[in-house]
Length: 464
Image: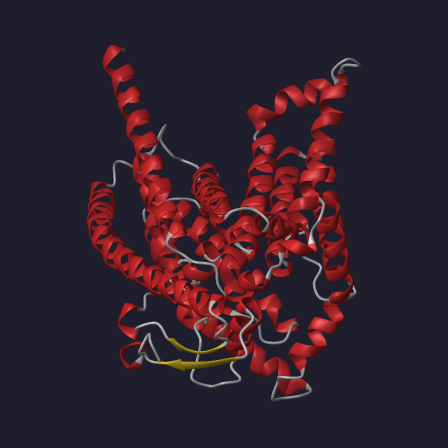
């Protein structure tokens, strides 16, 4: 018993150390990611009180997008010093790893290898990590959106567990205990509104997951719970408020104007692009799921054991292919679908039993080798992020120095191409030698410049 206690204590300590390393790793990258793109145009002077946030969001809801919950989060962080966002966003990323962890069954207590596997998958296979996790504008719309959604689904599944449900079932039969059941139902309803009011396709996938788990519970238990209905109703309510926003029509019309095809060929073109995106962002997960499913079935496992993985796979596919209804989306729109597939894949890997020594050895050795490899990838890309941040800061200091002297027609250096890394969105948001490039206009507005001439760094003369 004493040995077991120390083993548990040791695993807990190592688990917490891994969480701390996970936080530190993402915080460093957040810290070295500068403000960019639309972040630079945010003017704190437009917000004299907290109510102005909601006024501006109502205007955006009516004219551009219905993602009000996530846009409010974005506006709040835009009004605060960036170090606050860096801290909160890093905590949010760690929370994402924990939510994925708690949605995987058959895990050990303080399963360190599972936590490391989740981090490896997120860092290497997430869709546009630089845009969806590190960039302020993207993280608030995608990372925070999936965390809110998974937070709801995790709580939803927690209450659906037969052992955890007993106190609620008992509460409904006792007059005094009904208040607790009502509170849980109300909490899930309002949490569901937030979860449904996120991203159009990802929230739709979340509703599908909650619905399928509810139907599965009904199939097994032959009953439905009030809190289940409340949670689903909340998600549906938030989702409808988002998709019915008047601003969506204006945004959709603007995006449709850029499409080449019309009529039926529009959907053919969109479908082919979705196929390409699924192949690029999800195929690694699909391949592992198919291989492990075939192997485990061959070993005598029952198909029902993989229900959780199948539900998340179906949600991932639905979240991807529902985009056929919209003009061509940005690749980051597949972020939620990618997370659903990641959960399905990790769940399938976790189904490998201890007695299958070959696969367990491959799994353990693979995680260790991938962790060592990730250390070198992280340090190399981190060094490039530091170099990019240095050049961005030097350029801003030069702009401020020149404008303080009354110079508003400036020649500015672009970032050195050799520092480019998949963990930085700056190269898509750097100034360009094309005078009418939109980022050049952002710089002119941000710093009050008349004209910008962008040149390669090696051709730039600070005095010229």
